[in-house]
Amino acid sequence: MSEKAKELFVSGAQLERDFDFESAKKVYEQVISDFPETDHAGKAQGRLADMDSLIEEKKIYERIDKSAKDVLSKIGINVSESPEIMEILMEADAVDFDNEEAVFVPLKPDYVERCLELVPRTFAGDPGRNCFGTGATPPFLKREGDDELRGASRDEFEKIVRVVGEKSDVVDIFSVPVQTDKSMSDYECARAMEDGFSGLKMISTKKMTDEEVLFLKGKNDWVDGTSLMTSMTYMNTMVSPFIRSAGSGNNLLLLDLTIAGASGPNTPESLLTLIHAQVLSMMVLAQTVNPGVTCLHGGIPGVTESGGDLSYSSPSQPLINAAMARLNLWVSKFPSAQSGGSSSAWEDLYTAIAESDLSRNTLRKYGVHIVRHALGALGSLNFFSLLKFKEDCDRENIARKVFEESQTRETGVIPLYFPADDTSFEGIKEMAEKGNPKNTDHSLRNVEAFMKWEKTVNEAAKKKLYFPQLNDTVIEIISQGEMTP
Image (cartoon, rainbow, N blue to C red; front, side, top):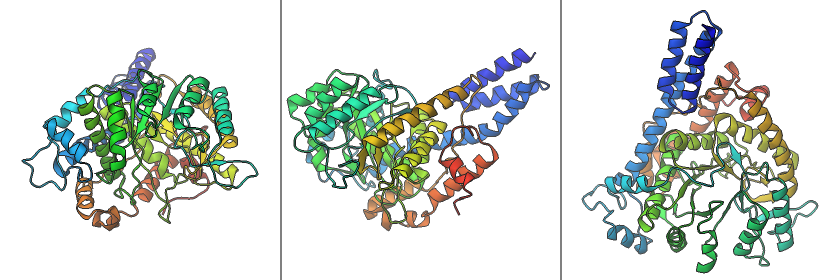
């Protein structure tokens, strides 16, 4: 009887890992009903306590996915600065001219759906879930004993490539780790990375020639990092590079780095909705230019500190990026990349290393996909330190083993208690109308939204620590007695 109970429980845990929480709940209820005297009945009771939270969380992500498409068709995107994109959309019969209530240029809902259906849901170069690497191209290389702010020289960049190659058992994506000076072009950086690292690599091709851009074509171990939008408006300087990248057939990592309260709305749901909408709009344009081109969802939400600057030391940073990953893993099914594992600290290297370790573990605990900026970056992505990179890799190697040893066939999914915001669509529309999220009533009403979410997560973790042996920002806050007010 106990073996049958175990077999049934394991099937429920698998349904959880497949994000089918409704079915998992039914299985756990059956374990309790049919095998009430077994140990697994007690375990099923414990998992049932999480199922309703996970079911509700998934419903919010489903709403975000739908609302993001509604943003494109009911609010629209500002195309005023890009007649080239407007011409492309009009030739494709994508614009909904019958919609007279949209703030900007609305797209036809059926056209959006057709384009998104063309986006491949698999990527041959995908390293899998909970993968961490470098990225962000910080402007400055942090050198030991040298405070001068400048990029990396050719020799320094080539040394970084060699060290990353030596750590290839830990580095899952090698995105350009730091800007270089004039001694080395972006194309030369790509060639060096190609020679020194065999795994997944990313670079922006904006500054490359047409011939150099084709270096990435047909290579599943490369992605072309590109962006096109900010605050619902196409960036004119990015239009030609974007269209060229899409037309070349390179694998596209479509980046959106909207920051809550600064360039985007203030609640977690409204922030993800806007970011998702902007990435989907890039996908629609990419498929219009080149149907079937591979697109990775690079929604990378950011949060601010009290002064309004981007804060990678905030506990909310890994939480909101984990939620972004879940939106794609659970609902949209797009290959995706997130951000985390960095730190706002830059003068105190030990603090930066410790904060990065905690951030990566938080991301890992909730489950993410491909995470850039996680190894070597510091100062909220302003610096790259080779010394920190080495220490990050050593700590990541240990944490990865601890996590893998804790995983069994009976391991389920941890709720993130993602907070609902029924006014998120209206908040985005208000932002579009007023032109600045800082001036909206929605943002002013929700200035403490992220802090309240942190408190919910912390309180839940106090009652039930899933991986106490894997320290993270949530556990650290609890152990220090620092609870968000």
